[in-house]
Image (spheres, rainbow, N blue to C red):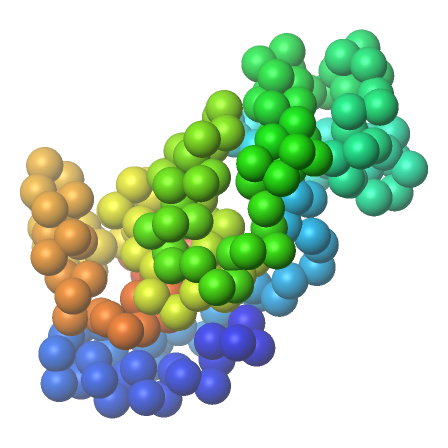
Length: 209
């Protein structure tokens, strides 16, 4: 998280004034998730699609096989050169084959142009990405945060964030989404660091803290 970590001290000072609960959570978190960029934007989105509705271990295995089928690099051209049978042999469901192919076609034709993203707003990128089958607002926001390292991304759609907020702020599940939407204004302009803080907090599902 090289792009975000330097702003943590400033974020905590901001939260002390606007949201002491978030400031406390940030002090309690020993380590944030790694969000360093390792692959292309296309590869990152394919990875997100593969991770949908499967365990982390299963997704890692599928992704490893699929990357091998693509000759080590997942690109639109290599995906489109594979048959459905070759893609499914990696363990990818028929529905996800359609999603990945749709992303590959839209990327190859520049309907989705990753080169333009650095100059686009978060909202415009979400609008572009959700044109692809299988990519919803949550997946688009994860791309903004983990691939583009945008600084102010909060996703009420994320179950882990909802659970962490419910636990930290004592908000019932029935009201947690509206609470996050309102409270994210207090976290801004450090929403991404707030998201990372919540995921790594004691109240997050699967937390080892």
